[in-house]
Length: 161
Image (cartoon, rainbow, N blue to C red; front, top):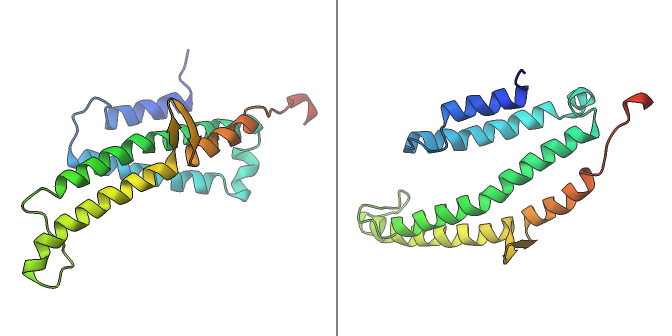
């Protein structure tokens, strides 16, 4: 039995960026760049002229939406971890603000900016998803759940083409 294109692509990503590591600054930045590239790819592959082929079936819309929704849910954890890292950076002695006017301001402003970044990431996380126990109740992820509940119901009858 052969692999689907999706399985093959997932395997390629898994080989390039193994889930269990090794992890490094470079691999983390490469993964973030990959997210941007993949969204750019999807934007190009689903524009009107190509959508006639790539989104010709309703279940493809649902499959794309479902996978994007899973990625958005993952942003909750990512933003939480980035916020914690920014808060930890505020305590790092060598941290500085590259845009500070004077050398004295560089370090004091660096700590303040890191704390501000941590707070902003926490607030951003609340716009991704708000949980009530294990149930999402607000945010983009919750809204995607509602949209997905509609897309999951759609299908195309190949005999009607």
